[in-house]
View 1 (cartoon, rainbow, N blue to C red):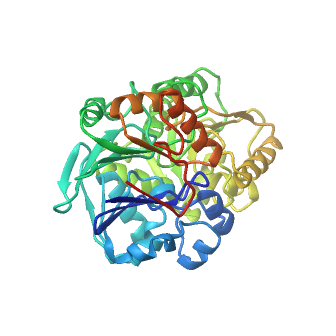
View 2 (view 1 turned 120 degrees about the horizontal axis):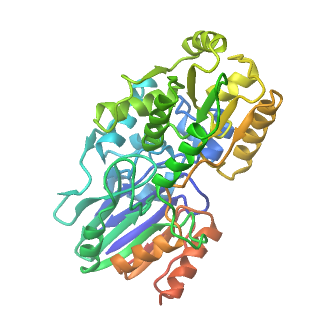
View 3 (view 1 turned 180 degrees about the vertical axis):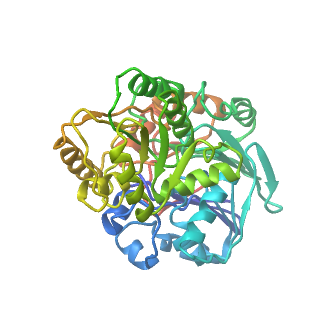
Length: 442
């Protein structure tokens, strides 16, 4: 008997967590924060020391009481990648379970960095396993990591091999045929799994209504090239902001910063953390090309120097969503006072995540920036999530008997259910649109 509990990320985008019970053992796949509620409550985009019960109360972490009766059965926590909406609740909630955490090396380094910085002790050990490998978790279960492309390195789909069939957990992924960092997705392995009995596919549905193939990261790189190298920025300040975890994007920014003959400065705690994880796992090398500043005092001193040397630096700062405690927001609110001049360049290499808090924070930041008459370049970005046609390709590759849409609001889950219906599946029969805390048995 296989039983799946949709713990979090099925009512909304974020707070992702799914528990799967196979016989007498359970596995938790992802344990993330809900960024909207988390930032609203903490005013921070980074992990800070707060009571888990308080975070559960405000909906910033998944409500794991949904699997209270499975608590003693949990054998392992398996995050798919290093984004906080997939690992951010581990420091707060994993001690509820006597279970180790198994993830890819980059994810492991990011998690260890969070725990070290906030002096958090976990009962369970953090173990790491490379993508495209597997291990026998018990007599009944084999766990396999299948390499995927996404907007952070070492992302995997997880395949749980059971006597009832294979359960594939595909949260988050992108079918990037021209990645700028790392290999293409392991299509061959997905096709091989599809020739076996795939009992269920739990699938990211964020862009299920978006009828296209999601463009490659190499397209985002070309968009950046145009803005950074194709527009005259002589004697102007240039600031780029993007996701701290997007190592491929940071690589591109550094490449173009060097071509601009500018000294490159990374500013912000989360950026320092992800860059350190990338270096310690051999994914990328920044320290010989970039000055990395973590704390406000260091950043303040550096900004004074940069202010006098117009046109000499490329500043890469946290704050792409306008988070109040980010470096770019502090440059605006007086905490890291910085006087921009007309026509200075601010490049948002991201999209605004469309939640009320993010929209309000970004609007405020952009309004503050416009008081200086700077040039703002927005949406220099391509998503790390699959769109509708990528999801169709995944379903065709793995041929699941059942589909459970995940990672989205109800309209997104229903958009994936509609796609499945187009492909011959039946809603309520073998397509299951679920809400947080619900269970289904196969």
